[in-house]
Length: 268
Image (cartoon, rainbow, N blue to C red; front, side, top):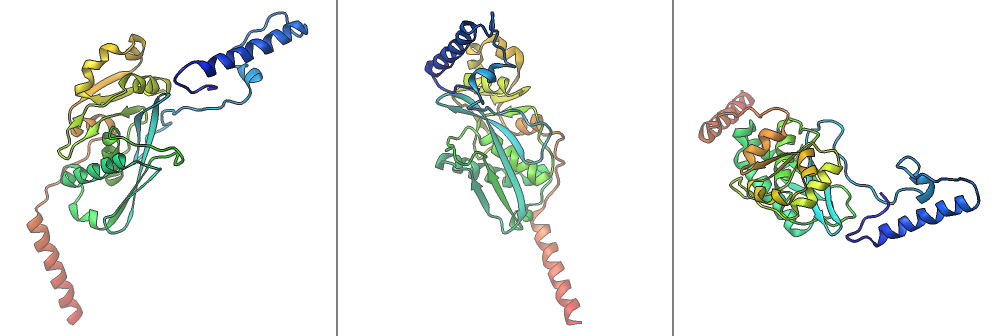
């Protein structure tokens, strides 16, 4: 794109530039009629100055498409998570604000609290580090509405289950997994449609705001209201995680027995 603004001043300048170049060609008799289309606009305005987010080309583990509101409209927000050997630390990068960092912390705590439900043994968290990154590191990012995306990204990387490529989501998450309402819904849905997203998960409490969304946007997207993270994971992951039964006391007893066995074998 050639403009990115809240108003139309930049748009007016670019249209005026098109008109001047078209008139110049006609006056110089290079052309009788000038037709400008998507395919030849670069000949008149040059290289595009801005780009906007697009849906992922394939399903990925640990990569989620969130939705952000900016002063110039909505934008797709890529959220990436990586699991690596460590000691249970959480690392965040991408020039994130304090509120977004707190949102990641809440997402991590919630995921740890439901680990058996997603097929992850709790001791795993003491053996790994999780790195959450939001690309375009030079751009400041803040706000709590990426909470559902953070949870989904962390669950995906822990379970190895990919996230659907054409789904985007927005919503704040509580420590109980509830999805709270967000602002800027219209701008976020417009960004999703523009970026090739097919399905958007929104907080159930924002369903009332859909009356303000243009019909062409609602017809171009499958919009699913969700009230809890469990619904988000159900729609976003390519397959559902297999839950496990976890008895903390039994696991501790088994670990102690293993250590005793190891000492006995060494002494022998």
